[in-house]
View 1 (cartoon, one colour):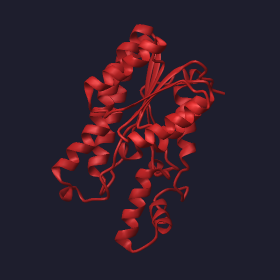
View 2: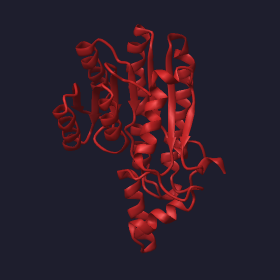
View 3: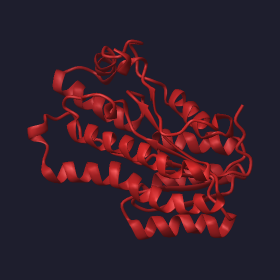
View 4: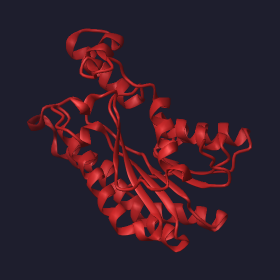
Length: 260
């Protein structure tokens, strides 16, 4: 079983969804946490709950596309704890279910900035710290949409393909320093992003969110959306010391979606 006692773990997008749940699971195994999100209220709630349990937490409201803020954020942890062991570049947004030609250019740019450039900025400041320590693990949240063609999700799919490409390139560059870089590729899970998609599909078809979930899940061989814990447990294993020889991989947690 993975043990993160004393590990310094950075999580972006930590106010909700996979990020918030991952924070609680790392904390339960003794990690020290560096958390960020643009959602100030949500991040504060997560941090306060963890601190009430005695967890050592730094939580800062910032955008992953703010290069200077991200650099300072990471070095706040290094100044306090001396290192950065694990980084989850998890922050991301969707752009709704929209045909490619109907996506406003500003929406495309925003999705690419947060989902792709945000991962790039995170890694460009995480890697030097880990290189100096000659150890580390980075996990980037991609998507099943980064592995296959995803109609009506073209901007989102493009951003997640970019994440996987960067993951593989970075893994090649830093493996000699005992730094592992992988991507996780969930399909549909009951997170705020997919709930919003369910609401959009439901509105378009005049059905409830529950029925919209069934419609979405019909594409998945397991015929359901994931519980977020199913994805987060995989995240913890991927970055654990027990998984010391995996790098440069895009791991699907998708109920079989990309298998067929």
